[in-house]
Length: 124
View 1 (spheres, one colour):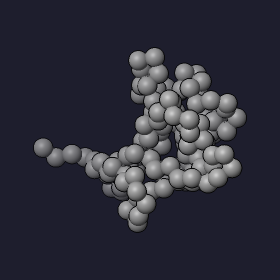
View 2: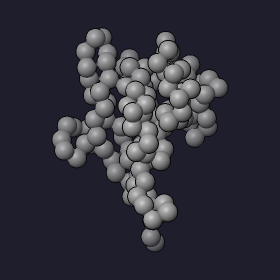
View 3: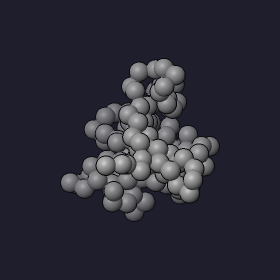
View 4: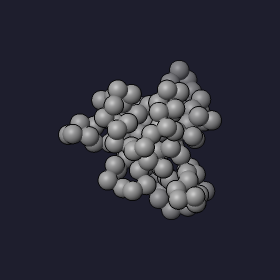
């Protein structure tokens, strides 16, 4: 069976084969490494989907999400899709980081959970 995409599990350790995105937590720069990159052919060219499962129970959930949104502000055109996904109330919900209104809401948010349960998130 032939697949029309290739999944790449982004390593959690620094290196040339790892995508690391800077974020700020407690006035210090840190690195978030999105979990998955999916490569597919579309219209004769290779496109990339960035998918990052997001744990709302972690203290750094909002700073990481803000770092991803800031990265998306500059690099969204390089991706077909950029989403952060989490489970909320038994449902998988996603924030589309390519949308400007989503990035603005993330920048102004006080917590990540309200973003995923709000109107800007979509079922995944």
